[in-house]
Image 1 (cartoon, one colour):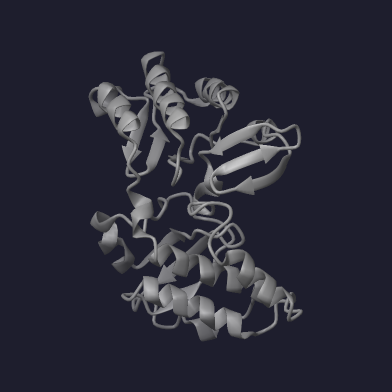
Image 2 (cartoon, rainbow, N blue to C red):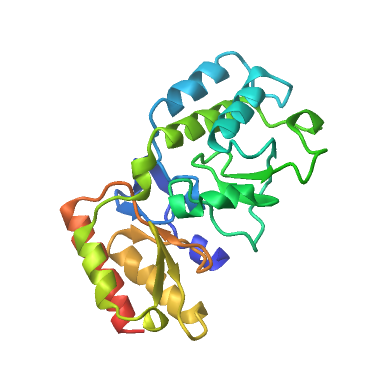
Length: 254
C-alpha cells in the first residue's frame, strides 16, 4: 500500500467525490478513505459544526458535551446496542459496515462489529451489545478532541438522513457488471456500492497496474487491494461512461 499511496499527488482541495491536485488534475474519488468519505468531502453542515466547536477553543481531549452527542448519534443509528467506544483502525477480520444495506441490519446485533462512519476525522467505531455488560460510554478513560466528536456526530446524523446514498442509479455500470458473467469469473465482486478486487490469482502486480490505469483516466482507486472501490454518490454522464468501460475492460483483460 505504501508504494501506491506515494503515487497519489498532493491534493489541494476536495469537493464532493472529486479531488483536485496542486497541478490542477481532477480525480473522481473511488477510495473515499475506506468509508470516511462516503458522503463526500464537503458534507452538509459538517464544516459549520467544526467551526462552531473550534471557536469555543475546544481542541484538547477534555470531557465535553460533544462526546455524549456523538454517543447519542450512534444510539440513534444502533438501537440494539447499549455501549460504544472508538478504535484507531478497523480490525482486519471485520468487513466494512453498510448502514444503508437493509439485508445486513442483523449485523448490529452481533457481539461486536466495526462501523465505517462517514467522517474523515473519526472513520471507525466499534459497537458492543449486552454481551459485554461492563462496556459503556462512562467507562472510557480517554477522549478525542471535542472537534472530532462534534464532526463525527454530525456525520452520523447526515448518514441517517441520507439512506439513498446506498443505492445510486448508474445504468451503464449496472450493464457493465452484468456483462462480466458468473461471479467466479469476475475480477470484481460487488456488494451494493462496493466493488471488491477479487481475482483468482495473486493480486499484487495486477492491482498495481489497475491502480495506474484508473488513475490515468481520472479515477483514484484505494491504494490497497484489500479495500473496496466505492461508487460515488454522484457521477457525471461522462464519468459514468468512463468508469463502466474501465470496470468492463479490466475484467476482460484479467
